[in-house]
Image (cartoon, rainbow, N blue to C red; front, side, top):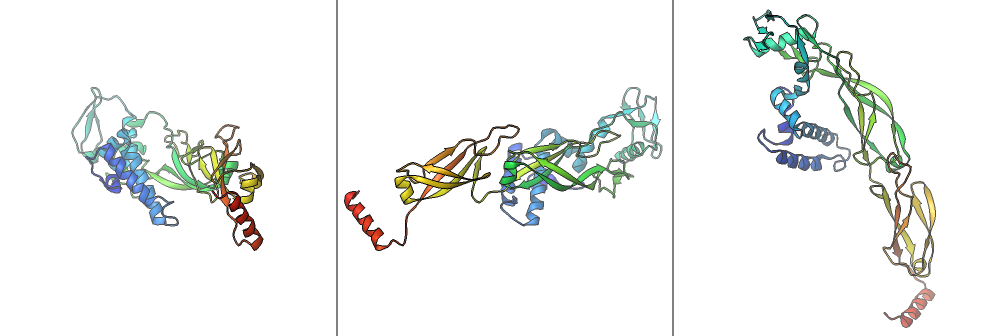
Length: 334
């Protein structure tokens, strides 16, 4: 099989079950995830290969086509969606391959002849074979890392994507004179850079997909373009922890404020605010600030901000302070 071996990429065999393939994927994804290997370009490339392999092998229909056609499985539809002219017999010519289209039976010949003839047909050099209708281009995923602040407010980015377009040399078939096309290395597609400004809506989270209509792969035969999907990954924040649309933050509270009550300053993604601390508040106590969390995607409502109180004990006490604490111990020994 020419090209990439997705089974080898995941370290599994062709006879392995879906469950075994999923287990292998999870193990490798954890090992090579960019967050686990920050700045490691080779790990990032390996992570992309692992995801590409799992995308094919985890889908029963795609896996079946891949097992039959190898890396060029996605172009099998060109064979299935073709319409032949109704003639009693029709010869490809060079090696005597012929077909009887009247009863849909095939003549004799080898696979190389068939593939080579199909290429000639797609290239317009043979009038006996033609595509029935235009095809929509493939959808594409583009991984995009953003900050929590960008996810909170929404933002725009300038990105450069490699758009897959049909290879002109082989007509998108990936085959040239019975061999993989050297221009596209048998894939049938070539990458063309495209610069885009994309909008990120407020409320996106890890795994969110933002659809950019009509910016995917080029269609076949004048068909429309596919869509581009931004696959969002939100970087961890140094202060806030996110759980769905709720945010959690820890705030230091002086001992005197915790005992007698008072106010402390609380950070939010929109700015700082003052939080009232009731007397005799306990260490680790949570305060809920309604509507101060993340926006819900596609909605005007917001989650909550939960403030965890961390009581800070005084240090470097002067003699008078120590004396007061001694008096307190006598009054409340336990």
